[in-house]
Length: 122
Image 1 (tube, rainbow, N blue to C red):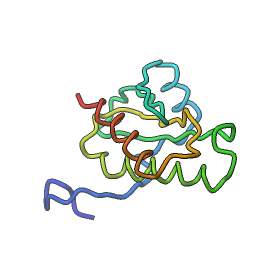
Image 2: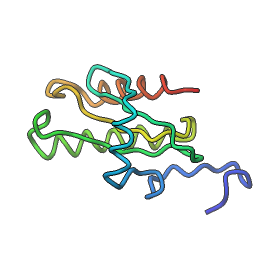
Image 3: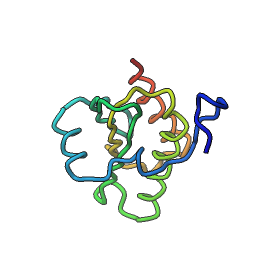
Image 4: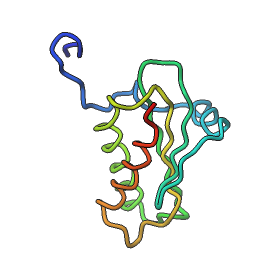
């Protein structure tokens, strides 16, 4: 895949280097104790000293009982991050569902998350 500087191409994928994968990664973000609160989501963040943002998603069964709904919320979070990653500062981010999304549309969920990501601008 070409480098962004060579062709102006910015990858829109979600490979492993853009994900939080280890328990220690999640713990360090939660321990930093910085978060923005939205209608449906909390966005926890911590500067990571790297060159790009990384994402982790937490969706509790208590708030989204059905697996279909939990997977939908995670898909929306990953997709929103994937489209905004190039404009985000180098932070480790955790998107956590904070309110039951029973009556929420996909657009409402995406807009709530986009508003939180916009607040991260340096």
